[in-house]
Length: 97
Image 1 (cartoon, one colour):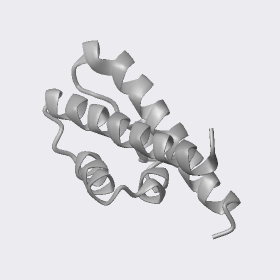
Image 2: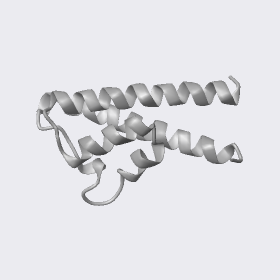
Image 3: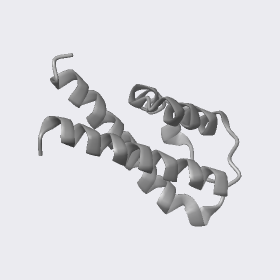
Image 4: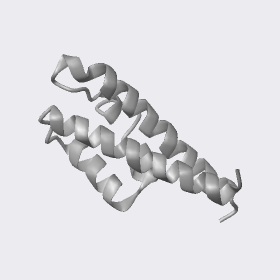
């Protein structure tokens, strides 16, 4: 897969996964700052903003749904969102731009 095709695929997967994460947060009734943070990141397609949410005490890494039945899916989507955002940023750096 060419670099441009791969970047487009990853970007599309990032948007889809972030949409799913946001939808899950909505299903949980989450209106927290982290919910708004992810909505803003999705609107702007901003992988850097997503990465900035992770790490440290009180970060998105510590956030979890109130409904226990959503926790496994939330964790899966959260990890996937992070991985894709990191891949976008790494790809941006390796492209020389």
